Length: 158
Image (cartoon, rainbow, N blue to C red):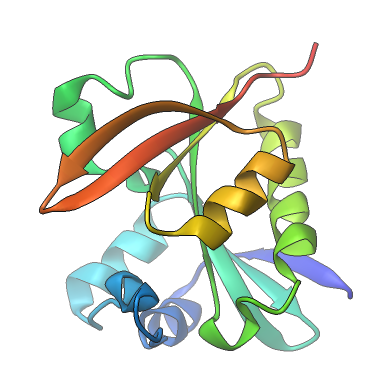
């Protein structure tokens, strides 16, 4: 599996925003709007390709945080926040480790001295299992709009 990372652009953003997930992952479905496109092309968003197909994307920094978490203080530790999304047709088929490994390598190359933090909905057991395989551990839990989230941290390697 040959994966490569590219910067997000408007064409890629439109494709990603049109992805539709089955229940219970439909929670991650988005609406294609000009403001959604603007966010993806303005902030640190990237796409991951396999051959000529986008199989996922990720973001770094504030866009990877859940807003209510900030007011509750769960993001006070100095970390690099990472948010990921995989194309629905590629989820649950064993590609997550390779996909996530590439993203972690990219992040470590740019931010090697900082711990990496993820925020995940606690119902998303597949994602949590993947993150635990890579050494992430639960840090804090909080609720936003009746959904429980948790932050997970992987300490910077010495």
